[in-house]
Length: 592
Image 1 (tube, rainbow, N blue to C red):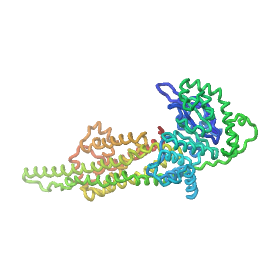
Image 2 (cartoon, rainbow, N blue to C red):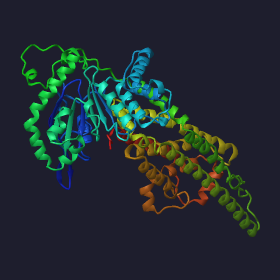
Image 3 (cartoon, helix red, strand yellow):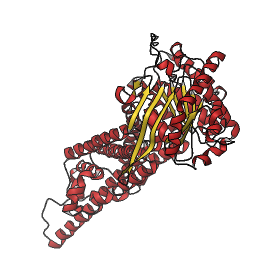
Image 4 (spheres, helix red, strand yellow):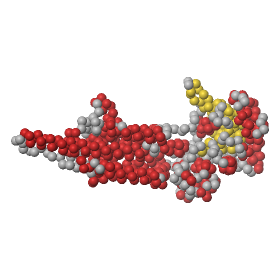
C-alpha cells in the first residue's frame, strides 16, 4: 500500500516558502488505478515527482508497504516505474532494441532465454509485438507512449507512475492508453497512478484524486465526482474549483474523507469477488479499511522478495557501448560529418606546407672577408629562419586548434543532448560510473582515430621535421583534453544548446590566449596559460622539432616555451580534472 501523510513540497521564492504540494494525505491500496487531475499548475506533476522521490518532501511522511521512505530508504529502482511526459527512447533504435536495452540496464537475467522471454512478454502486454522492428522515429504518439510503458515494465515495478501519458493523443489513442494502464493495474497488485489533465474515460479508474493549488479537494470513486462538486458534468469540475479557495476545499474533503474511502473499499471487494482484480495472497484486504488496520489477528507472512537484481557495472557498460555505436552508425549525418572532418582537416593543414618545407641556410664556418657579404649572409639566414620558423609554428598551432575543434565537436552534446533520457535511466538504476565510462570509451575511439590520422597525414604530406612520436602524442593529448573538458561542460550544463555554446567559446579563445601568434602581457599570460590546452600541445610539439628548425621557430616567437615534461603533465592534469568534473555532473540530478 502507498500512503501519504500530510506530505508537503515547498520551494523558496522571494524569501518565502511556498508549498507546491500542501498537506496531501491519501491511501492507495494494491491493485489500484488512480487518476490525478486538476487545473494547470495545481501540482499534479509535482506530487508525482514527490512520490517518486525526485522532489524530497518538505514535511510529512510517505509510506510504502509500511516503510517510511524518508527514514528507511527510498524505493529500489525495480520497485518503481516512472513514465515521464517526454520520450525515453532513442529515435534511431527499433522498438525491440529499445526494450532490450532497457531490460539489460535494469534487470540481471540468467541467460539469453530469460532475457528474450521478458522482452517478448512486455511487448505483448503493451501491444507492440507487431511493430517491434520499427524505428522509434516513425512511431505515432500513442505508440511512443506504449513504448515508454514497455521500457518501464521490464523490471515488473509494483508502483507505476505515469505523467501526462495521454496528452496530445486523439480520443481513440487516449482511451487505448487508459485501458492499457487499467489492465496493468490488475496484475500482481500493481498500483498505477496517472497524472492527466483530461476528464475523459474516468470510469476506467478506481479512484480520482482532484488537486487544487497543491491541496486535496477530492479523492474518491469516479461515479461520485459530479455529486461531490454539485455539477452535472465532469467538465464543470474545474470551473467549480475556482469558486472557492483551496483551503476550503481541503477542509470539506477532510469531513467527507472516511465515507468516500468506504465506498472505495466496497468497490474493491466487488472487483475481487467478480474476479476482475487479482491480488497476491497477502493483499486481499485493503489497508485503507479501518477494520483491517485494527485487526489483531495474526498477520500472514509476506512472500519472498521477487524484486529483480540490477545488472553489474560491466554488464551495463557493455550495453551502453553497444547502444552508442549502434546509434552513431545509424545517424548518417553524424557519420558523414566525422568522415568529412577526418579527411578535410589534415588536407587544410598541408595546403600551407610549401612555406614550411624550405631549407634553412646555416652560417658559414669561415668568417667572410667582405663585410657586405657577411651582412648579406646573416640576412639570408634570418630570412630563412623567419620564413620556415613562422610557417612551422603556425602549422603546428593550426593542427592543435583543428584537433581542439574536433574535441569540442566530439563531446559538447554527448551528455547534455540526451539529458532527459539519461536522468530517466539513472532513476531506473543505471550507474553513473557505467554511463560515464561508456562515454569515455566511445570518445576515446574518436580521439585516437582523429589524432593519429592527423599526425600521419601531415607527417607524410606535410613539413613536420622532428620527433613524430612526440608530436603525435601531443596532438593526441590536446584532442583528449578538449574532448574531456567539453564532456565535463556537457555533463554540468542542463541543455545541449548551453553546452555547445560554451564549448565553442572555449575553442575560440584557445588561439589568441595561447600566445603562439602574439605574445600576451606577462600578467595575463601567467593567469591564462595553465588553462589553455592549445599552448601546452603547441609548446610540446615545438620542443620536439629538429634543433635547426627549433631554433628557427624560437627566432620568430616572443612566447616562452615550456619543457616537454611540463606540457605532458599539464595536459594530463587537464584530462584528469575534466573527467572529475564530468563525474560530478553525471552524478548530480538535473531533472527539469
